[in-house]
Length: 164
Image (cartoon, rainbow, N blue to C red; front, side, top):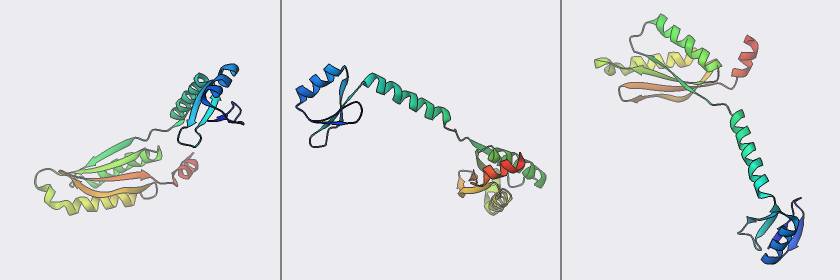
């Protein structure tokens, strides 16, 4: 097997027993890095320390990672203009915070026969929020409601800087 020391320097090709003895002499573990290679590649390392550092890096990456929430606004085809504007204000705030928005138009009773009204409403919402959002998923029917998904646009951080 090909042996690599703790500093990354190649020591050469050793029989398995001899590589194990070299690891014992240095007080390190013999870890097989690439079993499919010819000859297999092994590395001398402190495996416990390696696993600890790897878990620390993963923990740090999770801590820094930003969770994206999906907020939802619901309207009906007969929702008044002022109320739709109020909901758009809330949606704009959510988008500027970096959240995705699911716009849901719910149909009750026979309203479902007027899906074209809901589609017009969805287009208007997308147009009004076009400065801070892009349409990720176009409007589609899902049961007795029509759903559209909006994501914050890439220009969004510049907008926040201007508002600050």
